[in-house]
Image (tube, rainbow, N blue to C red):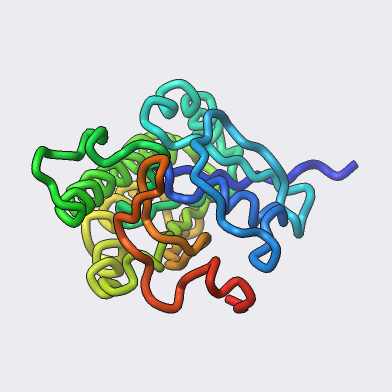
Length: 232
């Protein structure tokens, strides 16, 4: 039997689309057949293989802060040991799915908030958590002596497309970019490569609570349920 290849690791904050991306890479999600469902929080490490190469493992980590403390340690040690050829960091410009939590029960909510003011505060807070993920990863990348690439996938473009210039500047040259540079500070060009990709995995409004109250509609032309026959 041929040996497995060095794997791909998918990580990021909670609610950004890591599990969906893993399903796409495995071939378990078809845009023509699958309709986006409700957000289900990942509770543990998810493992699989790449559809195009069954020898290439794909691993996704849960992203909620309380779960990172208990599930990331051993996998990050594997990052330091060079087990992964590449790391995909999934972010969402702060639009992290809230699940069944109503806005007035969310820690970002302040009394008297309008939906817009709450969403603005939530997005700013979750952007900070995206940077925190990179900080948690930094020491382990620096310990890794093998070549590694890091791809940042900025998801949920359908929610922030109207602010695309500002969003792209933030991830290309702003605070996020500076944190990516720090990840590879101890690597030379032959050991280190970074890429940045923008897009949407699932096309749907930004909602909260069991009643799926709409906090922000997706940009016109992005409706997945209404345009399920369209090829993306």
